[in-house]
Image (cartoon, rainbow, N blue to C red; front, side, top):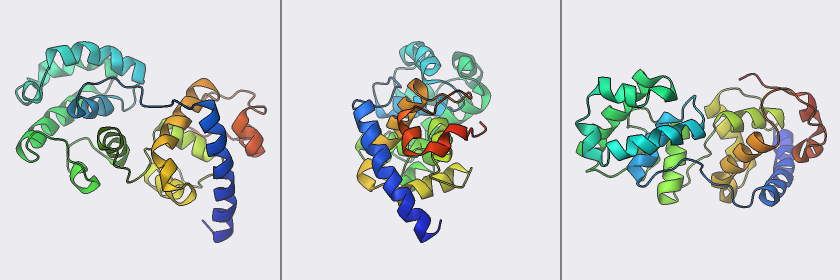
Length: 221
């Protein structure tokens, strides 16, 4: 990103934030959980799955597996079936049950508070880390780039990259840190309720009016 691009994108970002704040003043995480550990489980389950489906699955899962030790002692084959509806259930089960052991043994049963430490937990990359740290502790070290954030960042001309890590880096340059945490949830709400992924006429959408080329930009999933 050139210095001129950065300047232009920062100006666009200010207008985008002002609009999103008005549209979705109460935007927040849609996953349901009781504890920081359950938050981590729910976020890991949400990969390639809707929050609605995850909440349906965890409603029963969190009754059956009440505390961390229940995951530590769980049978993988049984746990796989308990989360099957979220997709990629074998990999998710392996990661979550391995995470439970590490959280218990290495972190004394507590989800760590730093990016460096939380990234050592199985199944946790930057997106999950940002969501968990932000919601659990108010620790904001980056921007969670989910499918909505990725798609809208490309659509709104805020990045030239397709890789979530590079997109996050660009967004962190463009948006002030005070907006990083909420930006994810504003864009998720916008993607769900205003501008979905399938091609449609969005020329009159609020953010398209800020960046008119967006009307013809449809990033691939």
